[in-house]
Length: 201
Image (cartoon, rainbow, N blue to C red; front, side):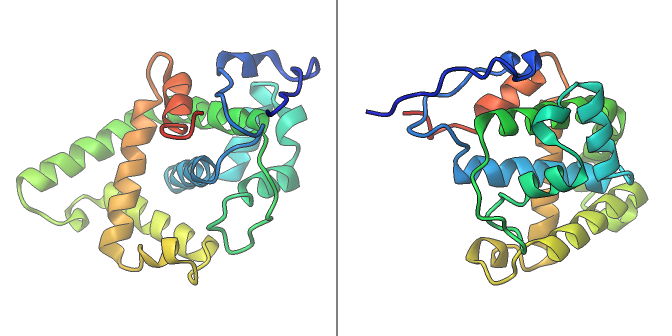
């Protein structure tokens, strides 16, 4: 029987917006860690300020005690097992919650861009045109591919599955749809719940 740790009284109250899943251990599962980092990678491809925007969001949401500074954020994202410089350390549920809240917060700021890109993709698909016909969408996909290839470990089978531009483009588009999913009311809660499908005991 696993004994759950009592709630941390010093944890930011905002984290209480996201319920604690019933997991065997008080840490984020592998799939959820990977998905959170990929969602943040998509935000970086949309927002040129990248990690600076994430750190600013952490300050605005008063999550600095969980995220830490630039190095702290890098370490948290390095818990993604697909990373080239994987930290091989657990990601606590509170840390995962903080990253999801930041992702949702930034997604809401990017709602107009996200909708424009997805609408543009739908129009291209309807007309059977390539993504190069939509400059802004092509730029997003290009930046995402560059970020993914620079930061993920190409020797891992899960990364090798995205060896082609086409497969990476599809991943980037899927993540864009996830970002839209968390821009609306209760977006952070919906994204958080989706991370644990099949993981809850």
